Image 1 (cartoon, rainbow, N blue to C red):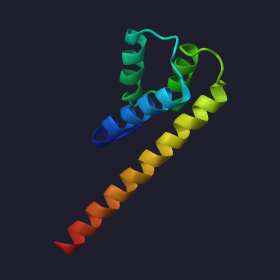
Image 2 (image 1 turned 180 degrees about the vertical axis):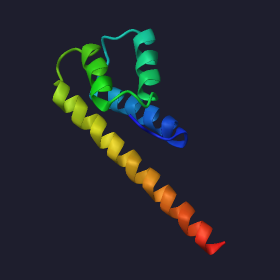
Image 3 (image 1 turned 30 degrees about the horizontal axis):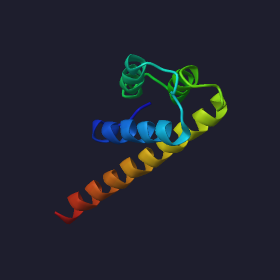
Length: 96
C-alpha cells in the first residue's frame, strides 16, 4: 500500500472507520489491530495483505473479496486526494 506520509493518518483512519462500520476485526486482539495499522503504512504491503489480516481476525461473515474491495475503494479515494494535492501544488508553483 503506497501512500505518502501526508496521507498515512488518513489511511489508518479510513481503515479504522471501515472496520467499525462493517464490524471487521471483531476477533482480533488489540496487538493484532495495532500491527494491522503498522502494516498498512508499509509500502511493501498490498491491499490484499491487509485484507487477509482483517479477514483472519474477523468472524467470517464477510468474504475476503468484500474486504479487499472495501480496501481498494479506500486506496482509490486516497490516490485521488493525493493527485488533487499534487495538482494544486503544481498550480501554485506556476502562479508564484
